[in-house]
Image (cartoon, rainbow, N blue to C red; front, side, top):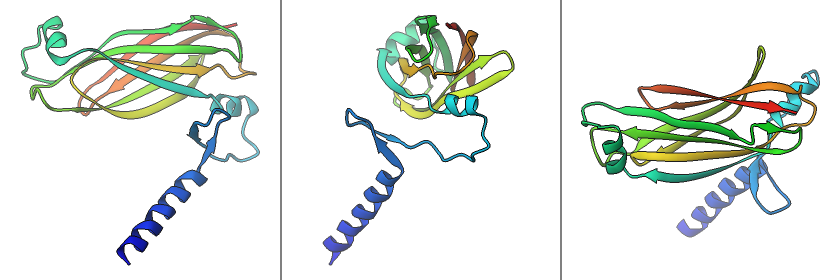
Length: 181
């Protein structure tokens, strides 16, 4: 009986999870975007259809990062080392990569850190949050890359991609220019 209950519990969990996802042609399952009222501005709707992928790697371990920053282990340290968009000039419908390298250090050497990464695209007075994700990181320096497709139909011009990195106590921002051509 316990096996039957466990089976149905897993079945309900996975079937519910998959109903809120869609499968891409290459087999990757991604969450469906929320349904919006018909009255939503078509330009805003195009912004919300941004497709993106994340890549992650550790650049420096804790000891190397602590040495770089002359870290004494007294309080938390959160720094954004670099933030870029590659290429800086990107056409509508084409792909760009938003890369950020950040460092997180804590007094307790073994403590992992919960980080929120937010990427926001700004054009004039328009601000669109492209992505937000929460991750748990070991201490050290990490590179997070978000590859995204620039939506068709948005205004061409100069933009700023603002990357926000937040832990439980600190928030850091970094701006990277880009031009949609």
